Length: 169
Image (cartoon, rainbow, N blue to C red; front, side):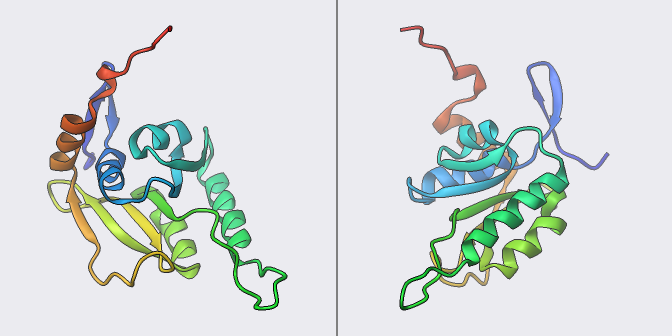
């Protein structure tokens, strides 16, 4: 198939790079950052541990339309004398590679740039993290993270789903 698969609860699922990007975010991105995700919001919340803009069970077209509406908010001009642009509704965006062709250009045309790339052991891009040029200087060489290594680092430092428990208080 050409995909990297990871077993989860007895099933096999495609590794979308969010754990690797999550490790980077937890170690390097400010706690008050807001991140747009093209995966289910609870997945983004668990791995990235930041404020998330996302949804559940959206089609690719719905994700695209959601992103377009968010960047439209970013591009509205405030009514102040200086006519300054409003703060973007999100600081970063996690984009899984299958959605890059559709979502990447929208982000890039609206002032976001790739700051981190998650790759598999063959060097194939799996996911990207975008940041705003307002928050970061222009990055000529994004950070490249290999998913097998950084997924292990995430597990060692932050645990796995097996470590979750419910506190019934």
